[in-house]
Each structure stands twice: as C-alpha cells, then as structure tokens.
Image (cartoon, rainbow, N blue to C red; front, side, top):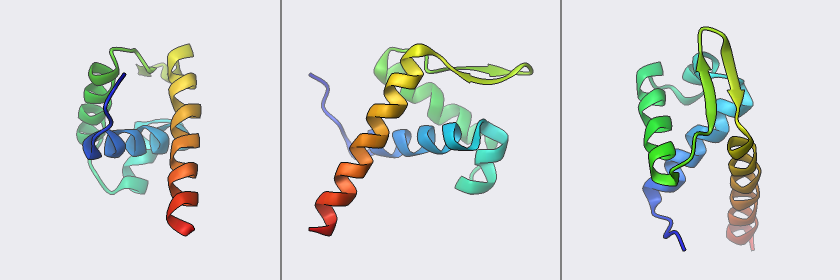
Length: 87
C-alpha cells in the first residue's frame, strides 16, 4: 500500500493540469510555474509511482496506458476530497 503525502497530492495536481492542458507548455501558464519545474514534478511523480505516465518531447504529449489510469484515479481522488470538504 502506498502512503499519500501532501507532496504527492501536489504532484498529482500538476499531473492533472498537464493532462487537461495537453502538455507542459500550456500547463505552464495555468500553474504559474516554469516548464522545467513542471518537468521536475513529473519526473518526481513517475519515480514515486515507478511508472511512466506520459511520452513527451518534440513529437508532443501523450499519456501512456499507466498515465490514463493514474489520471482517472487522481481525478476521482480530488473529486472525493472536494466532496468530503464540502460536507
């Protein structure tokens, strides 16, 4: 079982934003952090999960199968946290 820390939640929020923005460049403005910081966060998340979440580079941005699973699970997690905090 994986323990989730605040830093993990932060990394997952960055990941969700990158996916919704369809890449690092567009997420940069949304997150108000540099592209290199986003890249470092993504690397940290992939290392933490021991999974490759996306293909990135000159050819564009694309989620891996693991990335799609993590994105869907992360989205559900934050929806549940939002629901919990509203009650």
